[in-house]
Length: 156
Image (cartoon, rainbow, N blue to C red; front, side, top):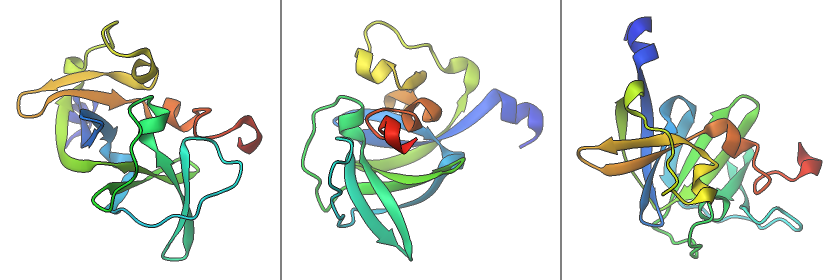
């Protein structure tokens, strides 16, 4: 893809969470794997499920449902973990299922409207209506990574 096309299009990994679809920039997704057992951390932010060991690295597992204000559910063995790297952060999110990846023309991402729950609207860049999948909330990664639900002021 040439640089002109890179400015016109973005690629997203699409996943489901509480019956809704979300997209994360594919360039920060490092790995996708099935749910793993975690070690709970005392005094952790409510959005943190715990930590786990991945090939010698200790990785934080975030409950994205709680961060986005969605119906919280117990984690299941069928859940999927998305490992991301963005800047100095390496962490992971638990989601119901990773569906696909889509290439989106940036001009087709619509600004959040008032019909989107405020908690979700705070963390998204906009929405995209896919012919195949339906409405996708495009996550603003930087806002998510700076969230108080993930990091308390003391850990920043």
